[in-house]
Length: 164
Length: 193
Image (cartoon, rainbow over all chains, first blue to last red; front, side, top):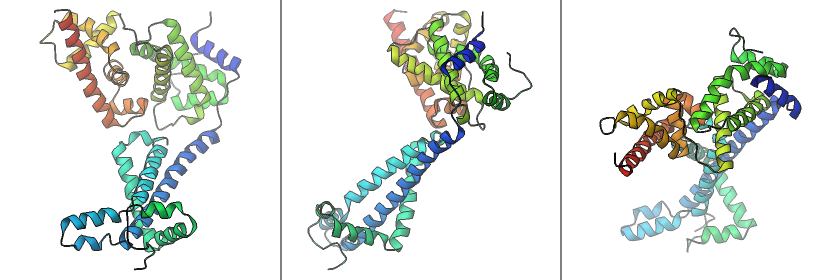
């Protein structure tokens, strides 16, 4: 009677099973790293546009208003929620991509999500210094109608192109 | 074919990649601990245990190039076997069975010690009840308790096997012990002990 190890080897032969090549796993891991990286980059773009829209839209100036209620209302209206939503979406993508990498499971959710947000913020502020947020914002305003509606949904003044 | 004690797992993996017959050495080395593990998870049928181990070893062979040599091969095999066991539970949609051997009962006492309720309940009854209660608690808690108290794995090893952060392992152990304790107390109250 064959022992268990012999049975397994026989079963492997009968099924014609062979080890998947190393490149298969390298490619798989690369896909998840790429997904995580792209998510950070896209999150950074979201931050740069959000910061541009917010700072260009009286978001900072309203903080000095005497009436607290007006300050909070204007401040809330100045936040580009759509870009924050995009940032959240890509932070989640970065988290999922990273968790599927070889040792991604070792890190706590709060650490991975926190790191993804910080990286997106840093990258976004760099892009902002290069006026990338402004470029993306104006491009979307000029070339799409949906974006205009989305970005203006919570605001009633200003043309969002830096012209007042 | 038997595993040479002089060869490391990494060498055995390299040999298996070159010649499938050499994979038998890894099967021989890990069959017994993994068989014990699936039984402790609640797979008592020898046939089911054979199926789980067979699928786990074949999966390991097919994915041998994905094995990370920075981890112990045993942890990797435990992970695959664990996933196969959970798949079986889900396929059969049944709760795990309890284990009955005297050796198991002695080890289950380790868990009873950790729940700090010896003073409240008779020790002998507790030993029997613990393994019954273990089969009734949440899957993730049962897994960490089995790995920690029966397989005597470290937190890091459990984290590698279950692919969760070490901090989560600690949380699951703590919650698992609480759930086990509640389950035990409920059982003893219901049987009026």
